[in-house]
Amino acid sequence: MKRRHSWGLKRFLAVAVLAGLAAVWTWTAPGDAALWPARADEAGVEVHLLDNGFHTDLAVPRAALEARPGPLADAVRDLAPGDWILIGWGDAKFYVDQSPMERRLPDGLRAFFRPGNASVIMLDPAQRDPRAAFAPESRRAFRLSSAGFDAMADHIQGSMALSEGRARIAAARAGDDARFFASREHFSIGHLCNHWSAGVLNAAGLPVRPLRSITSAEVMATIDRAELDTSASRD
Image 1 (cartoon, one colour):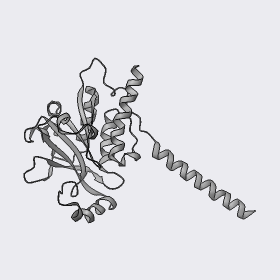
Image 2: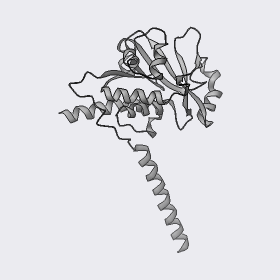
Image 3: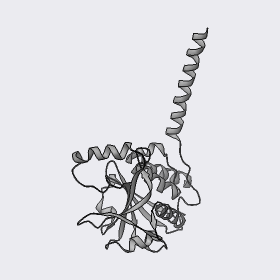
Image 4: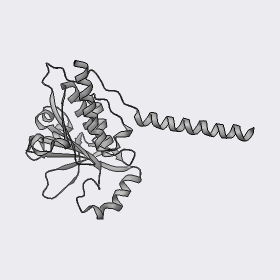
């Protein structure tokens, strides 16, 4: 009888653990109806989410960023010319390095599995409109309310590690206009670039699935689901 009871308890615990993992995997962090979607009568701000197959960046109008006060706007004003600013986040070394991937694999393992890695926020000025520069399948355009855009920008600014109230450049690449600013967050397999992008979208009012946002495809799907939900609510 004791053996049967022990086996039944183990089965119950295994089912409970699997159910808990499934719940976390599918859990959705709610959006904010006060921020998303933008009202039909509001101009809002058009933003693009970009996917290179494993990493996501945002393309944000420079003018909208510079119109705000604060260290993020100040950092943008100091960049080279470009009407759009590509914004991304990643490990302070691996994200910046552009050497052949086979040489970077040991460092990639370090970035994934060592806790507490330093991170950076990329601000990269671009002249071309994202609609022309990126293929449709690797880009999602969405319109934020003014309040949603401010909340998104505040979230990005809040990720910056400031020095005397200003963003601090941690890295730059020769012949490249991108600048990498120190971030107060840490990079690891539990908090990857796509997790960061999902957090930015959630700050702007969109619902996201945090754990599943380990992949760029899931972050892109966040936009698709939000747009479908918006269309359904307006029908």
